[in-house]
Image (cartoon, rainbow, N blue to C red; front, side, top):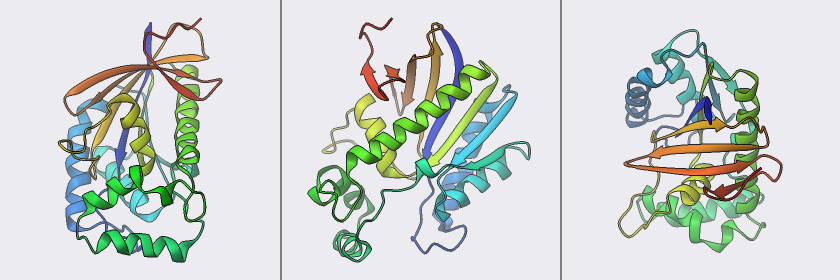
Length: 231
């Protein structure tokens, strides 16, 4: 197998959710600038560098900071697939957010996505399966880009906790009694590899201090644990 591309996924910087550009706190700006310094060696040597982000203000602000820090030649592209979990009943969603905000911890708010049934019933929020499917659609889009220009392209996708939660949980199931949830500005480094069959892509994923592999089935838009037999 040969490497056809490198994709870096990251959560936007810390925010107070005011939806006023760049919608990042001083802490959030420092997180993204620190991530950009870390990423400089990752993107060096690639002919094309693209930052994808959701259209939400806090991710656009984060993406623009990355572009400024990395190089003017970096292109920023908004991708609706990367948007945060959709609110089907905004008023009831605010009640949920306030409930966790009163606990005065962003960790609890993030963790609630994985276990609160209100994120699954499809009444207040977009169900988790739909959020996961959007992330896999983005993975498929990236795989197509990498196949067209093998070895030439590196991408950075700036998105939200809910989308990246599904990727992390498959690749590195976390024990939240001991492990912190994905934090703002945290990076997931992913190599895309191909054996020539465009329908199956091997992913080699680096996260925190671990490395894990999986196969992405582009036809079924799903991840398979590495070792699964593919054509």
